[in-house]
Image (tube, rainbow, N blue to C red; front, side, top):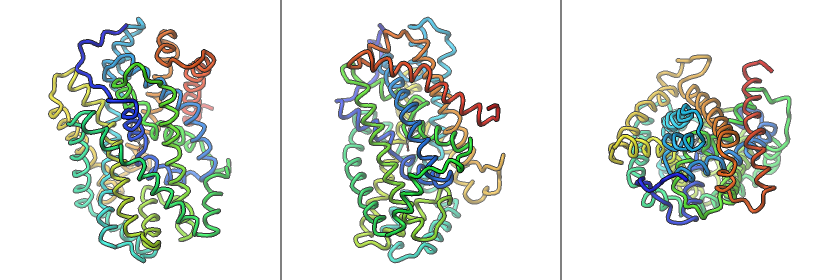
Length: 454
Ligand code: TRP
């Protein structure tokens, strides 16, 4: 057994608190902002199908693995991997996995905070009534004017980063748990109301559903498959230690499998609802599904401007989106902070200031890639796109691959079986097969395909 007596590590106050926080981490911009626009860019149905398969066959097993690694070690990801490799008598290089996670988290946070800043700015735009009766063209120019201003984007990015740092400083019990408790129910209700609005678009509603759910495999390139797989990791917060950290605050008597299914289920439902709400509006207004990261900002305000009660709903929606982003961003920062505090003797404040500061600076690259550095491209990608590709499509799947190999092949099977405590050994065998063979092989083949070997 691992000795955990010497840590100053926190604990969730209850199973419910943990579910809320982990769902808060999973549900965020990934579901409502990213899923619709990458679905639009990658041709719809076939992409969605691959994404769903990846969640089921790769995401859920890896989420269970990450949670159990965290809970067994009760440490931050870097120390967790050090301890677990010692326990398994394995090569000490595995702790680099923890490192990659910390770095991936901060890289993601750098652009996440910028987009979350957009959502925050849109609260004010909704409040000021700018969407009322505005047509698609007007809504589009509101968005274009906004992202053309580096000053505005920096302002909102700064504000969001400060909010993230503030909550992370407060530690798990005071900050994280409270924020999520009220958010999820309200978010669900709002998503359903938006879907109800989408239903009023007549034929376009069915066009939207058709786009999302009827697969046309000719639209699927190997890069779309990589994006779908990468997004399964991104949306479930996997591959960089966020769920490992959350698992490390989890007490031993809680069922990992049940909580993982709940979290993944809620996450998937929110993403699908977002898609069902957005695409009918896209088609009803002759917009293009592939308009990129601005998609939700160019579509949903049209709905808010047109529907009764839309003024209030618009405000509520962007407030919810900003809070959903906040409960995710804290989990992107937590691995770095936990490590600085537990390993480097930083105070929590100092650790937050450092990780937040560095990430904020990096975020400027994303801010400028929408305006002043718009034309600065490497491999045809601007800075935002490079960061997104590097993290979601490469680092997270690589991290997930290593986590799968470690839990499936290196860790003592008795240990993983004890931690998961599944109701019968048949379930354990299924998980073991997915984590040892299916998940790593899938990641491996998708990579081979993308580099053109297959
Ligand atoms: N899952 C979050 C979203 O969908 C983003 C996120 C939070 C994340 N923590 C993460 C992504 C850790 C990858 C790794 O918005």
